[in-house]
Structure formats: C-alpha cells, structure tokens
Image (cartoon, rainbow, N blue to C red; front, side, top):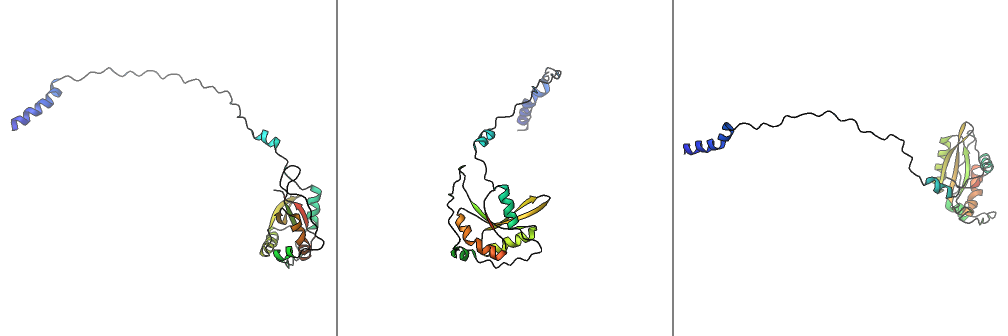
Length: 193
C-alpha cells in the first residue's frame, strides 16, 4: 500500500521536478501615450422654452399703487392705539348683511383670463407681534385672516387681510362690522400673490 502511495505521488510531482520552467517573454513597458486633445470651445446654453412661454402668459394681477397706498393709510393702526376685538363671528357677520351692501358683479375671470379673488384689508400695523395678534383674534372668530409684510421706505409694515374670496359681495357684507370693531376704514382689494 505504501509503495502505491509513493508511486502515485511520484507520478504527480515528477513533471514538476524534471521539466524546465516555462520562460515567458519579458514584459516591456511602452512609453506613456500623449494626452488626448480635448475640445475646449464653450458649449452653447441649451434652448429654454421658458422665455417663449412667459411672453405668451398674461400679466399677473396687481393692485394699483395709489389704491394700495390709500388702503394702507385707511387701515393703519398706530402701535399706541388699543384694539378692541369685539368682532362678530364670521357666520353672524355674513348672515347680517347690511342694507348698504350691494352686489358687485365683477365676474370670476378678468380681461386677461385670470381668476379674480378679493381680500378685505382690515389693518396695517408696524409690529409683527400686533399683526399676529389681530390675525389670531380674527381666526378665533372664524375669519380666514392672514398678514403680509411689505416695505414702505425703510420700515417694514404688516397688512392684515381677510380672504381671499371669489365673492366680493361676501366681503362687503361683514365689512361694516369689521370697520366698527377695529375703528378703521377697511378696503376691498384684488388678491395678488
């Protein structure tokens, strides 16, 4: 048995011992090729269709500057003035339509083809904290109120508005109660973003 194992090992390892190793061709390193030429001419900007489309869009709605300034002046509440929040709830104010309120049939779409929405500007304040307080109290009464900051000269003021609403008449209905409660002359303006 031992002889058979030795013969098998000899058969397996004999070629390794007796045969000469393979001589392969030596590795020759070629010189580094030159860097490829890259075209560095500026690439033209891709065509944008935004300018073409914007030229065809209607102009965004705006409130005329004089009308907005008048609304800001009429609704300005000085920081030292106290504000009485005896504003009636929104549901009651709309239900109690004043005899002065008349329907303003302006239609929902303007001449430019854009939807018309309206806001009631109820206050212009110099303090963000007071604007937040007025908005909070109006929301507590069920009104959709918000404020927007804007710059006048070097100071930042805050417009408190109710809306937007597609029905100008609805804003007109509770406008007298808001004016009386806050002591302002609120203005109905077109809603712009």
